[in-house]
Image (tube, rainbow, N blue to C red):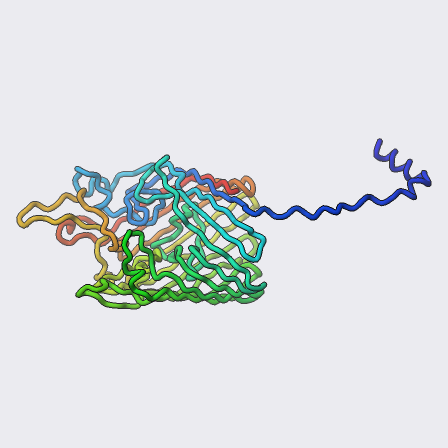
Length: 423
């Protein structure tokens, strides 16, 4: 009533008609923040009906395969005693923290950490930060961007749907990971082209080794058609010359790389579909998360891919799935991912609990298959709850001298329940 009365009084008053217009502000609009933080907090519970492994480590921190039956054996326990044991763990290690710097400027930077260490099964305060992204993006024009630093590979740029955001379908059809590189990306409304040059592989040791002494970088390229404004279907490739055993009698050079097909499309409203297919040789040597780790005597050739989809039947509820598979074509050349210390002539065979992971041997699998089915409840844009069932069927190569009586073909089922809080 007060508002209506005031309006009537102004209408009736001649002075009101002569009222001066409101003074316009001369202050400039607020500048965008120089630093924008973002975060993902992911507390999860993981149950596995049989042993599983995370990038070769016998734990469930980021499950990528059914567990190697030799590595899953506890110290002092007979081999195979844990092959039927279920496990339960609570994890927060896949949580992430990142920052954008000068995000709205032509030149901007991104820095991102997560807190996972696959050598630790269920850590609390022992979880260590891991650098994921450290890059500079320079918009050279409206259509061309130069990106330099540590970032996702240009090759095979699609990830599937899953609550296990660190494992996704790696070593089971999903391959491309992080790389030190420089990328040039050109985009129009209907086309995306990209090229990159980067370090051939990864070296976490103190001494320079093959990635540095090979002296040949990795080269990558991709081309995609933009579908529906945001989707894309494309092809990609990556390659380098890998130098095995530099300055040794067994030294040799071989092609390492792959070609692939990828897509991220929305065929009908509410349903998104993502896929990748690839074929490669010695691809894991380059730091890609695949099965084919070549060595001084053999090149490993492989194929694989994944299919993943998500259907949102309301803004709050969605179902998603993932199916992935990777296979080494010359599986007779795959070596075990583990080894034993030297055994003296005539001494008893070592216990399986004495097996240790061999650095540089690769995943040690000839095949790896995963299937995931999940439900997502989205409370709002910041919080979601995901419940996911998973299956892994993995064929591990075992030591023919000491472990011929153990079956390396393992299947494991499990489930993961997680909350994703996104800032």
